Image (tube, rainbow, N blue to C red; front, side, top):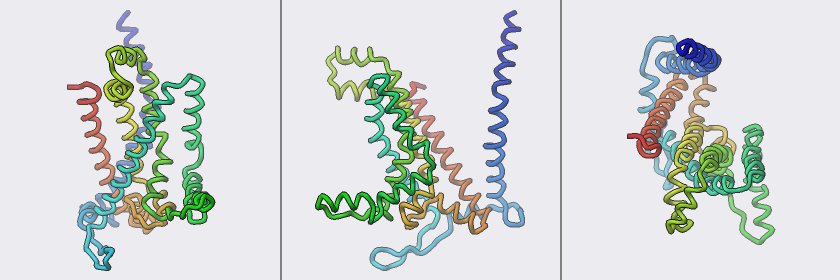
Amino acid sequence: MKKSCISRTQGTYRAALAPYSVWSLLFVIVPLVFVAYYAFTDNSFSFTTENITRFFTATSNMIQDDGTTTEVRTYLLIFGRSLKLAVISTLACLVLGYPIAYIMARAKEKTQKTMVTLIMIPMWMNFLIRTYAWMTILQDTGIIKGILTKVGLNPIHVIGTETAVIIGMVYDYFPYMVLPIYSILAKLDVKLLEAARDLGCGTVSVLRRVVFPLSMPGVVSGITMVLIPSISTFYISQKLGNGKFFLIGDAIEGQYVANNLHFAAAIAFILMLILLVGMAIVKYVAAKYVYGGE
């Protein structure tokens, strides 16, 4: 009888997994196989590693502020710039998002629902519309300049700078930081906080020694969900950066538009490997130090 129940349960489990397996095969595994295939072939579809080595060896001359030129590794420089902006954007999302997630988690249930809705509203709009909205706000004739001028302050130039690109990234990926942290904090047992206060911990000590350590799973998830898409973004840098800040996503798009499909696939393949290694490291660190693994 028990074996029969177990068999039925396993059969139901496999049936439930079938749609997900088909979806993963068609929209995850097959595209990745094609990317890898194109990355290691040339225009005649013969095996080659030239596309991969080109990513690491291609050079170009970069003009310095003093007018001199310096030879640099083109795509390594682009990846470094992408990583820098992605890290800054992720840290900004964490610094701004954690307090908001904590306030949401400690609010009344009705208020929580309202705040979650407000956080998610931008996600309901098209990505392009959000980016164009920030172009209107940050441009030299935009709202910010008008406000600064009315209050008697000198207007600042934002559009076409790294600051504008970071603002766009933070705005677009902010919900992906707040919601995972909120989901963990909302489930936090209030009795733990009360016990910490009874033991003489102040508000700061409770946050530092109890709340933040227990919320680390949400923090790790948020960092992962913001950092990875930030590295590979391209449209934000084109519109808010006025095309001045060429990121790794721009490089992939540029090669694709120029019909260099094999090199575009090679860049995407290398980026994918770097992200997978990064995710594996994060998972290991989280399992060892966050989730209490050995």
